Length: 140
Image (tube, rainbow, N blue to C red; front, side, top):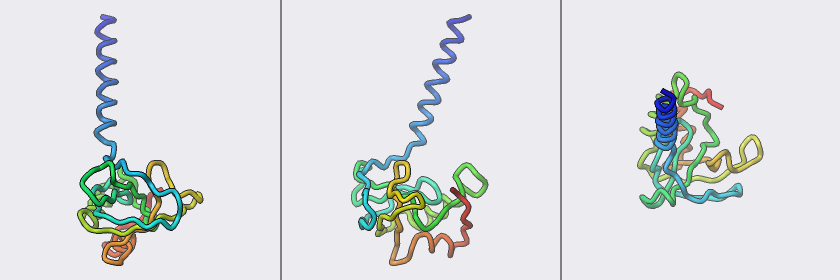
């Protein structure tokens, strides 16, 4: 009986580890560490309503993960979070974007594993595009 409990616990822990890996974003590029750095590429991945990855190639090791500086989307797990992600996908995914790194409220350029940046598509801020699409702000 004890062996069965140990086995069940091991399987449960393995499932949790597997689920965490499946949720991780694929963006592995080197992040700019100073404000004012411009970078551009295709929006290759959208993580939530205010996070995306920019890359010139299809190689995720080159993709730069961005936290939009000018839009605070509802958190993915909150009401409206999935709609925010879907709106960012509709507006930005597979489009060319030009981004400029900026300092966030904390004064840092990096927030967790993302660079804080203002990004534009066709010379319009992605934050402005999201607001124009009727998306409400409300995240952290």
